[in-house]
Structures are given as C-alpha cells and as structure tokens.
Image 1 (tube, one colour):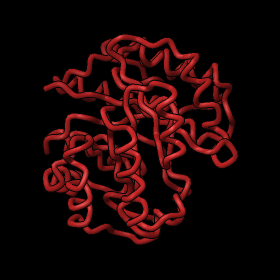
Image 2 (image 1 turned 90 degrees about the vertical axis):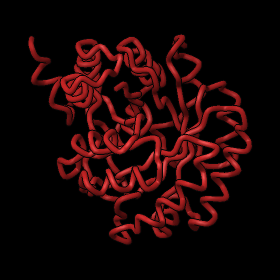
Image 3 (image 1 turned 135 degrees about the vertical axis):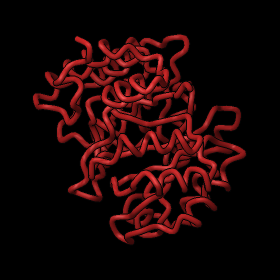
Length: 286
C-alpha cells in the first residue's frame, strides 16, 4: 500500500502560532519539506492579512519557493477573492473548506452552512481544470454543537465527490477509530485530516487507510490546533506518522531523517519544543 501525505504545517500549523514568521522563513519551510520527499504541501492560505496575519503575503511566499517537479503545492481558498489570488500564483491544487455544522460556519466564516456550500461550489467552478480538494471540517464533532450526524457528513461529501478529492477533518480531535472507519467508508472520502487532541490521531489515520482513504494530512512537528477550541492541540506530526506507516510497511516516499531535521530546525525558529515525539526521540534503529 502507498499513501500520499500532505503536510499542512506551513498553513494550518503556522496559522495557529502566536508569532508571525517572515515570508522567507515560511518559504524555506516549504522548501525543506519538499527536500524531505513530501509530495504535497499546503503552502499558504489566501485570507485577509488583518484577519490572519500569520498568513499575510501568500503571494510573496510562493514567489520565494523553489518549485520542484513531483511536489504539489496547494493553497486554501475560502472565498471568491481568495480564488482570484490563488489563480494568479499558479499553484497546483486548490483546497476549499467548510464545516459540517451551522454554528461553526457562522463563527469561523460568517456564513450559514448553505452559504458555505454555495461559496465552495463557486470556488471550484472558478478553478475549473485545477486539481481540487474539499475539506469538511468538524466531520466528527463540533465545539459548539457536539456530535455530528454521520449521515449529514456523508451527504455533504457526496455532493462534491465528482469534482474534488474529499477530505474529512477531525478538527477538534474527538474521533475514535471505529467512527473514522465507518464515516470514511460511508462518505467514500479520499482523505482524512486528524488531530491528536485526545491521543487518538495516529490510530485514526490507520483506521482511515483501512477504510479506503489514501490521502492523510499531517503537520511537521505536530504544529496546529483549532482557534475555536482553545484546548485542542495540534495535528498529527508528519514525522511521527511517517515512522508509524513505514513501520507498518506502508510506503510514503519521505526520508524520515531529513524530515526530523526539518522539525529540529523549526524548533529553533519558533523557540519552543514542538508537539511531535519522533524528532526528539530519534528514528529507530539509530
């Protein structure tokens, strides 16, 4: 079995950091991940600088990145203006996202669920011909509405299955393997985006693969979290997931030692210990 790992650290990870990194540093992070063999990287998001200063200057970041053959760079787009900016950069993949619940969409994007769906369709239409991902956040639980009806999520996923790769996100890290396995199968989702908030993120990734997913999101060093759920910790760490998958005989195409070096470098950049374990414990055998 082979799986595609998408590192979301440059976007989902850094977006939740208190410090705003220079665009050159953010571009260097993308370059280092690519050099480690990561074949898909969520590099930027096209949002208002005043709303998310950590993601300011997306165009400058992309201009500084060394484009590599075989490495797909994606950008998060949340509205039509973001779509216009995305198109101007020539990125390889567009990632549109909305939540499975009404309240989260209103709090996070100032839109109802129906409006968020309409907006997502418009983004995909504008990017026709470009590979696309639709990420459905809060697929397993919402910080405002609690448990989410699996039937609702499956119905939402199937709306976009003919146009985009659909990824189900455990945004606040509440899912368990049986839930992940059942919903991935029911929604026929291509991918899974897990958080390790309650220490189930990695086993959930395995469950997603068992259910047929072939794309897994992860974040270098375990960076990330959910700003609307203050106690939610970050994404599963890319290097920890690579260690697990390779140990289980699942090919990722990523050089683990080089990836560990990225987290070690990032620890120095951010000036704190990261959430991942493998970059601190080391690979095995040493």
